[in-house]
Structure formats: C-alpha cells, structure tokens
Image (tube, rainbow, N blue to C red; front, side, top):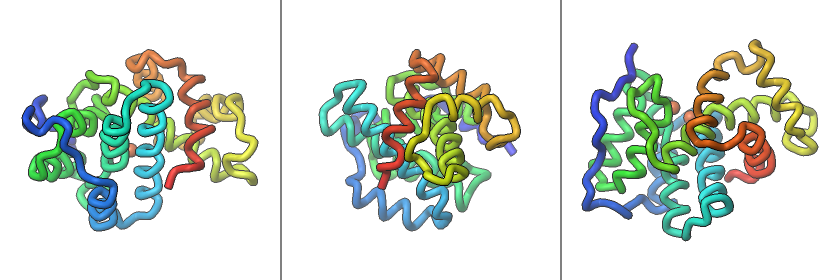
Length: 199
Ligand SMILES: [Fe+2]
Ligand SMILES: [Fe+2]
C-alpha cells in the first residue's frame, strides 16, 4: 500500500486565505470520521496548531484559524479510506476551494509516507505535532491522573521505551523536531500543557 500522493502542487493560488469555518470543518469531521479516538486525535492536533500559532508564532486570528483547520482535518480520510490517506481529504478541500497552504500542510504531514516535503511553518509544525501528540496522549491514558502532574521526564522516558506506543515512529518525531528547529523538550512541554484542553 503506497500513500505517495504523486504531486507537489495543491489548490489554487487565488483561494489563498479561504478556509472552512469551524462549524463546516466539524460537519466534515463528524461525517467522515466515525472512530472517536481518531476524532480526539484530530481535535488535539488542531488545538495544538492553533495555540502554537498564537503563542509562539504571534499570528493573527485568521492565521490561527488556518493552522487550526489544517490540524483538525489532517487525518479526515484515515478512518474510512486508509488506502487513499490523505489524497481524499486533499481533493475534498480543493473542491471546496480551500487555501492552498492549508492543503499543503495536510499533504506534507508525513513526508516519508506521502512524498511531500514540509516547507512552511504550518507544514513543519503539523508534522512535528502529529506523532508526538499521539504518544503523549497514550501516556496520559496510562497515568492515573491523566495529564495532571505529567512531567517532561516521564514523556522522555516513554519515548525511549520502544515497546511503548510502538506504532509511533521515534525517527519521525526527531526528524520533525529537527525540521521545525524546535527542541524536542519544548514540543513535549507545549503538548503537556495544552493538549488536555482540546475540544
Ligand atoms: Fe495521517
Ligand atoms: Fe495524525
């Protein structure tokens, strides 16, 4: 099964700045994603993207929303059409004339799998949050207090245990942090302090 997308250009330049509203994005998410765990993952990544855009990139509300939508919808087709992940959501967003930068971010959230390199800050942060967010969430589920009292060193320990969340690629996590030029510790800390508030 190859998920290589086979092209590098997405959307139309004249659609720059156009995105779905939160309501429209949730309608799509609820229609396409039946698995509640995947829904939660997408909401968590969307939340992290938005908060990062605000706090670390000092972007305005419109840009924060673009980052949010990219995070929220990045796995929209994974539940029902894993063999065409993420071609199907890309085509849907192109059909709806969504901002090409948002579509590119989704297309590049796994360069090894999709054959599209992350270029922009939005691309790189989506790639950086995706797998790491899942690992931190898996860790929260095995802690009696969930996210409360979670520490950086606990997450780093889990990262080193190859049988913990074994499907999460440590190589990709490090590659993504390197490309984003954000220390892994900073990413983990940011996820610990923000992820529990994702809705
Ligand atoms: Fe994905
Ligand atoms: Fe994901």
